[in-house]
Length: 218
Image 1: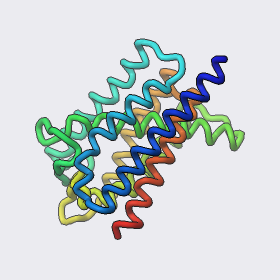
Image 2: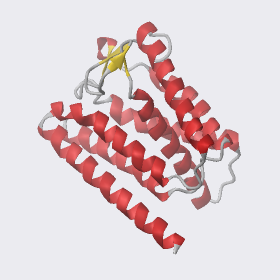
Image 3: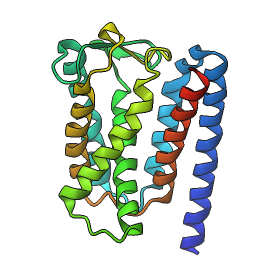
């Protein structure tokens, strides 16, 4: 009975995510200003993701809250100093900003970190690889960087953020890997890498979404 419930919930969440990302895809292709609805999509994905996490407890929420707060601070320092990720500034599509940084940017870090950790664990199982917390975090951080690449190629067209001289620095990707590693290690240490089919699907939905956007918005 419980297995059937989980399967039905996973199917429901996956269908909702595919529907909303499909609407977003068509909307942004027809009009890039449709990206202004991105905060709603981020919040929906976060809610579905949290609901899909197995065996939740108060520490689960504290772990995710830590990533939200820590990533916001990193982004705030980064955008106001240019030290961490390179020189960039945020547009308006990611919603209200506090000190030049979108308040919801931490939601994106939660989604990418968690889906990458679960996906890394899934790939390791399929390939019969035994990961410890260090190698698991490294692979998950690499998956985070892979997610970021197609987003960076479209960031200015979607009014997400703008790089100085429209050049994406290598520093951005190394910083994503470094801080992603820390967040993924934190999630693994707190037992949040358990199997979660919806999280794996959401990881791929996001990759496909931005790859298709790049293809149609050349």
